[in-house]
Image 1 (tube, one colour):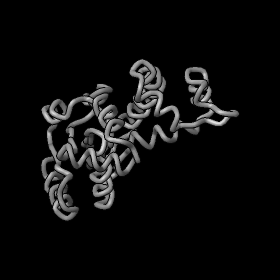
Image 2 (cartoon, helix red, strand yellow):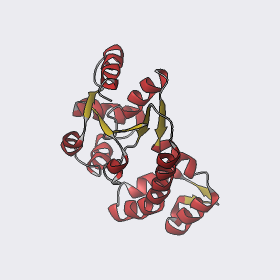
Image 3 (tube, helix red, strand yellow):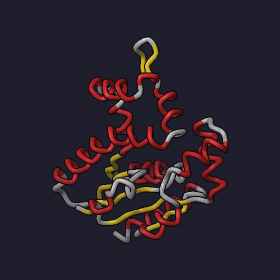
Image 4 (tube, one colour):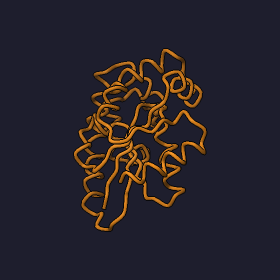
Length: 190
């Protein structure tokens, strides 16, 4: 099996690359979906309630409030990451152990480098796009201000650091047909 990690900063097109690969018939795991599932786990929500009690109103969890809190306070973001990241790493290790078949398997992992996961992959693909396109995508998609985007983006590993560590860089600022063609060409690298 060839295990390929897909990463990149917020709004750079990781999901688009993953969707093209799925449409081509490849298995693509998604770390963000794992996190979404985690927010339905009662044990995890209990830990959130202990660390971030203000995110519960009348016993109901408010994820938007949690996001607002952690992206404004690096110490609180670290507390949340300390709850989430061990879970993600356990899931990834289980997948690495369970993949016995041949072929190529992909993992969409926004914080791949930040979590030290690069050691698990045979190749790393970085989704990249012009900064202005990235900013406009995120502001439109998430309904946030430019200041909020800048704050969130500044918490991530710099774009140039990711690019320097990549085996393949895919520009997602192109037409979808050009992007598909580039992804198919990328598959020849593996």
